[in-house]
Length: 542
Image 1 (tube, rainbow, N blue to C red):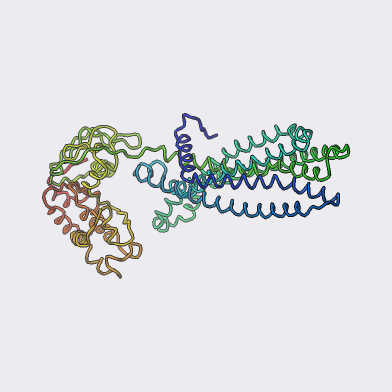
Image 2 (image 1 turned 45 degrees about the horizontal axis):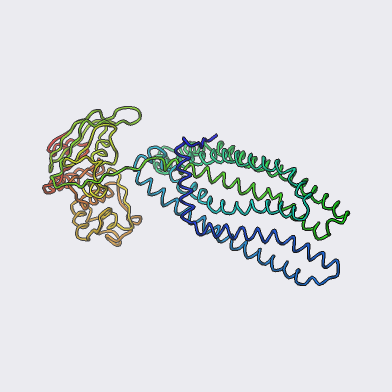
């Protein structure tokens, strides 16, 4: 069973998320609560008015006013129900959108660690599906108040008609309370298992989609489908258990509620024969007994809240992963000197980099080479603070990267990767990503330096072509990534295997342009080709 104690960080973050989300739609939640309570009040008033109208009609007394009141209450109930539906949908949509914005920003703030821990597919499942379920919590809580007011109001109304009626009902109320408690507990556990299985399927599906060419080439579509759907039996068991819990609750409600209603009606009939109740009051008592045993509504509300809490806890697990903190120091003027002092970085339980000391003078080029798995990309990530070392310190012009402000750090470091993610609507926007006010001239100059200008000009709309509509090879994508790094500028340029998909001639031209960048720009180059490394001022072998 999922632990939700005070010592569980995920549960604490989930509660904070839901409290803040509720405050975000606070006015609408309050309006929904008032409308729901008004609808419950109208529903509680209707049996009394019906009973009074019936008594007057049986006595052949004028009952027009009471009949009109009944009609008015029915119309009011319809209007309030429609308003409640609109408010519920609005609150759910607003809360879900707020949760997705907050969690998306947090995931991007955490950086690569989030994908490493949860997997990209599971993260998408949490931010899409689980956020939608958790987003129903504020509206469900507001509606639960009215759902509780119905049974309580029904018991009070029975007591006002005759205290014997309320006493008979309250004799069986503990059974209903135990039933509701069991539903809430068991649904939370099964919903958590169901959502975890969904996350595993989403993670495996994301891996399969990313490697679809490999799967197709290997002819393993059937095997991969089986791998993606391997958690399906767990999903089925959790889903069946969830429905069994609610089915048992409904069956018990069907068994208990009619007995209580029958007992109330029987006592009302006895009181009618003794002249203590009228026919209209017996009718009202029968309706109030139905309202007081409204377990079906409460079971549905509690089950929905249990599923929402389980979803919120999965969001809380993401929120509990700390975002990368930044300091308040500004970067002084300098040539871009990069230093690693006693840097140790662990991955998978082993030290990939162990007490590394490195000094890259400003304006020079360092090529990082070594066998696969030696930590070249990890060193590049540490140099630009895409990751933090487990021990030691990384400095840029004498300032530890941890102490720099976000804007100073990201403005000083430019990156290019082996498989660049080209974000943005158009090619121009993709190259200018991260620049506060990219000028067309600067973007085109960077594209020319990366030898990307020629093929961009052959696109249907040139630089205004949508990235999704721009057919390109792996080498052309790398050139666009290099253009983005060149357009960024900064005093430290990090190329993490960013030349691997280029032909040797193009690589040579770009290398010449790269090493020809003016003074004040330090270059860290992860290289696999000896000719590229040979052009650097120094080589670090891992």
